[in-house]
Length: 446
Image (cartoon, rainbow, N blue to C red; front, side):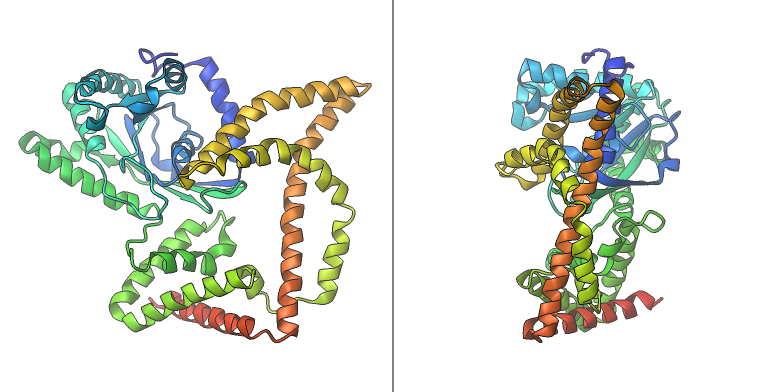
């Protein structure tokens, strides 16, 4: 699979995508929630436009939740080495040249543009990240014109026969860097480029700007967009304080809850600035105090921490301790080794990408090795196979074991704060309750 036939079906690519997609959707993330998949018509000529906050994981989020064949556009500097370029072409990624790559290199975009037309004609989806680069903020930045230019020029080159549709995509990660988080992908309603064609024929620049503004507004509807830079930290934390317990909710996903919360806050800022400022102030105050006391919002919400239940919880962990230890075979191989490397990366938004890439590479190496050892070390093949399958199962049990253990330790800590009448904790609970009450009133307003 090379640049010339990048839009064609490849059995090798399909196999790699299936394995990598399973790892992405079931191992790396504990849950992947997809909204609006009905907005994707595979018979249409589609360009996907996701927000860009988490480096390579943004592209993978679209790749592993869309049933389409997809081709991606990426900056050209990562194609400089021939071997890496060959791998990227195999992965259906095309380079885009920029001024910073050298003025002469811009001629290469003519060839890429011709190839994108072939991609769109073949009903292969094209993915362009319209913000250009990534930033670790839940906010949509100014979109580049490139995605609109590709759409209009592709239509123009085919005598406006493609009827290209741009799908706005909202991506939300419950945490950018950690393993076993929740990823939510929201596919918005398609934007028909044909609706801007007449304007494009008269005034290309105006059409580019209007399509870009339309795309920007539709992307914001499908993602978490915190417009305020001044109150960004407070609003971002408020999402966790109020809606953190709904991270795994599929029927009413946290993404939708957060958007409603932010919308109501934006209105409150106009109608009652004092209440808005109070909520933001309490949000930051609760965040700082919870961090200092080493507690979390779920423990704060729980009114009682019965000693009997806590001790029963500790006792219940004893039988599962051997499983926890056994599960660390998987944990040390596929989680801890990537983490050791990703911690060295200066850009924190790239760490998740490194974690995923290294974990899947290690999976291709060690999973066959563990299978071979299991079959070799045990007398019958079916016992060996059974032992092999216990490795990932025990890891999942062990992962939840660790979370439950930390929750119990947190419960003991909070119980001690309550028993000792810790002044800081008493104030934290008071602030937390006041904040939740204010937000409850806000959410009940029409």
